[in-house]
Length: 162
Image (cartoon, rainbow, N blue to C red; front, side, top):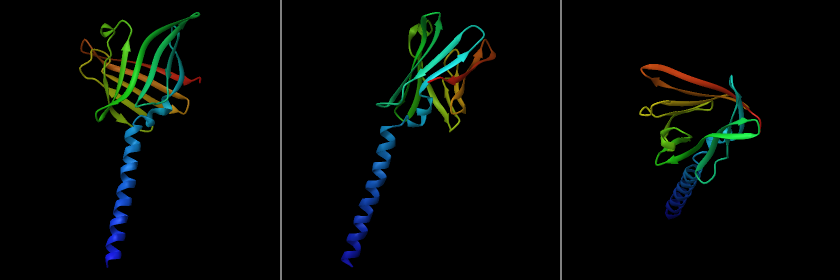
């Protein structure tokens, strides 16, 4: 009988240790689900080529930047951080010439295998940012919101080039 209780206690400790180690691993790497965003992406709008470049997740943050190429010059438009803060994940762009060059937080509100949706209803424009995966090497990035009472949106189709 004593043997049975010792085995039951030992089994409980092992199961608890396994559950804790699984939880710790996911807490340490909360951005792994966004890893498929890493790389260099290119889109073409009517005027120029637009690029987004994302690092792989490391130390609880992913870094991105958006830029255009003007002949041989690279013109940086925004720097982006994707990171966990508290119990939430935020998309945090700092856009050149907007918001006094201060970062703005957009909270992850929907996350699936095919899309990431971030929202900040208090921001002027956009209020929502969506990345939708069309395939392994193609995504759309859509910004949307309300300007002067009118719904607006812009969407770029990106292909992975690295």
